[in-house]
Length: 548
Image (tube, rainbow, N blue to C red):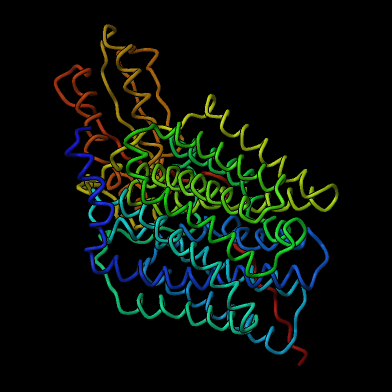
């Protein structure tokens, strides 16, 4: 990449804020994030004061991340099938309502560890509903070339707020009490509601009916399973989250037991973590130009391992703050890298689902890590848990040998959405099916090897956009005749499959035509399956006998 191009990338990172819709929602999101960070400090400190269990304190982080693991796949399917703006609004409403309930409970003295976890879980459920729709909407709001910059800016924005949010939360809790902190958080959740209600953006509409939730979830899972790039990003992100969350999950215990501090010290240390994260976020474009994504992930793991080990050994707040700044830099570099990979590797029609599946796994890893390291701290020692986290992070860095991250600069091309359905003699309804599609090729022996290579590519392309039970058969009586067969559940699914193909995907048809011999192009046959099982006889009516 040239210096001019590099400068363009760096400029675009901030120029994307020139988009008024993106800027308005991004700024409103920062206000909400500020409230969420204040609330996180307040909830963590509240749990540390009302419960003597180290595990319960660590589960505060688990309750914040577990809903994304449980609900994200459904939320992603909703983001791709319904109005993303409305899904965002619904998620924000749930966050506001749950936060108001938590404020009321604390104000009236109804404080119980499980109640705290339950309402924290509900707030996170709203976030799990909002986040995939918001992330997927980025590609609708900004130009495609600006998507990497916008995704990076999301991380930079959150971690900029992280520098002041925890410290502000600690000050509010120490000076004005928990109720004030929770009330301010609730007000902060109302800002995105108003912004989303006011802002509207154009979304490319599909001429086809909406997918069923079951089919949408299946298609999202299948596409993710077939993308080695997305699977690698998810695997590394999940392992990183499981290993690194000990830093944040156990920090209240480090402050209370090792450093002898209170809410102000906890907030100050979280601000140190955020400061490092902001520095890494601002420098992200420079890092990406200088180092490969795999090297950035390795260095991120080493930085977080050094942070975790330092927290296990030090009793100085200053040393802990420096270590947390290093950990924050590693944290945001790792997450922005894998997040950009998933976003760029996903076509627009499925991006909500792939992002949701990504969040489900990494948040599941974070929730599991919170439980694991909390259990180790409670049953053994806090130092052992942090040292174990450091060792695990070094193993995650070494896992790059098996699961290297791919270097990607451009986003997945958009579907062409140009398709003229072939004429059919039957009156098909949208849900008519299953539909069987057959393509017959005449391939001379000299082209068979190249044809098989091409068919492997075609199988991957067709299957990831919706084809099921794809097979390739060779006629035993006429060896030149090859038949490609696959199915779709309904006629609408067949149309949707063809609308999802990109221009690059359709080039495979031209390559197959070059290998095909004969006067006519490959013959397309469309069929509909019909069941031939036994027909149930209608039930005979029960005779009616009058008593009279």
